Image (spheres, rainbow, N blue to C red):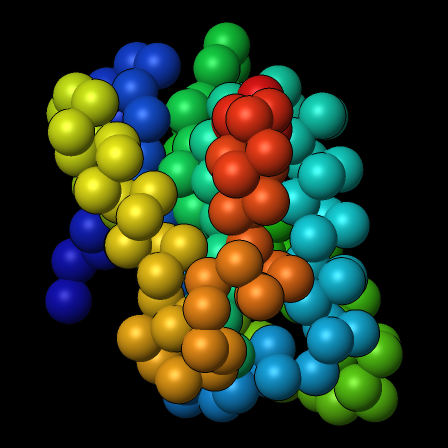
Length: 153
């Protein structure tokens, strides 16, 4: 099967979803959530991309990000996933894949789509039965939006 090439469209905001390998609920372990958040912050600073929102679900993550300068969505996700996977394998004492090979993205076109994606992300833990209220979920960017500080930029 030919390899799929991702189309990049400049400094656009993307809604990204990346699942764990075989949809294992690895992120039920708070240690792994913290590893992923630490890596997200590191690459956010290092690769200078806009980080508008995130949520870490038991078996996947959602991100709202805008690549800037020379970084592409593929570069950002490759770096984030590979380094986080190495640290997570070390923490668990396991070998093998942590993430699904591919991630899924779509360009966010306009404020209405942006707000819908952000709301979907933040409500995802409630819809999945992980917590009773979105504000109670600690592995989400919701608190940044609720306290008025807005995107993590």
